[in-house]
Image (cartoon, rainbow, N blue to C red; front, top):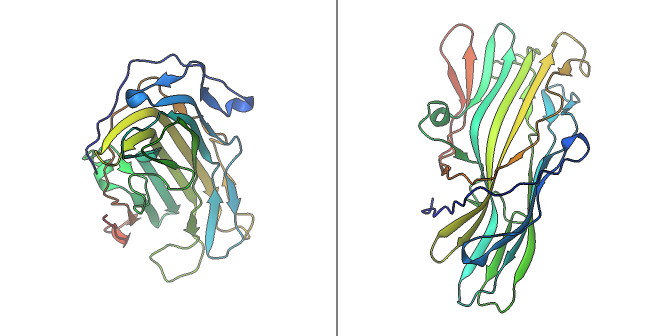
Amino acid sequence: MPSFLWDCWPSLEIRALLCAMGCIQSIGGKARVFREGITVIDVKASIDPIPTSIDESSSVVLRYRTPHFRASAQVVMPPIPKKETWVVGWIQACSHMEFYNQYGEQGMSSWELPDLQEGKIEAISDSDGVNYPWYGNTTETCTIVGPTKRDSKFIISMNDNFYPSVTWAVPVSESNVAKLTNIYRDQSFTTWLVATNTSTNDMIILQTLHWRMQLSIEVNPNRPLGQRARLREPIAQDQPKILSKNETVKPNANDAQVLMWRPKDGQPLVVIPPKHR
């Protein structure tokens, strides 16, 4: 990861605008001007006020889809006098993850980030690796190539949600008999709005967001397909927090996520090993 020159500024006045069901937070009012004359006019963040949906159409896996986290920002880049390139966009990292699939008395499968759990690192990049360190390269970033004579005004946005598949049967078993009894997931993320000069690797943090997604699904594997799963609390997600003072956590680029099988009796087994990048 390039050396970050994080730009921390004193506390800003925040005006939180809560829509119906508290679905949108926004920082508006006076525009904030950062180093290099970059101006952030508005930042919005929300999680859709809908419950997680559950799909039991497959006899092999249960699928669920969480509501989307959404963030957008309106930014103004002043004229760039030199032949240089700036990229403004979203960077996201996971700072906490609990993800367990319980299979009754037999045990559980769990997606784990060992370095994060052991406190060796503070956060792991949520980039797919292709666009690292950026979350994406479509609406998530804007590239301005100098020299330019006028201000460049643009909106960048991103969204994120979970849509996994969880096997009904024990993942390390050759049996197809449904044993899944519970799904639990609790993840926290930090999302940064960042501007970087690609020539110097100088990075300016413009805004920091915190958000969390929690999920609990109770499953009765003995019931008919289509009637097994029930969403438990929390039904509605807490809304994201737009911080008044930027944070300087540096996400680690190593994606060491591993899927473990942890039986009630016996030694843990690696089901899917980590992919290092």
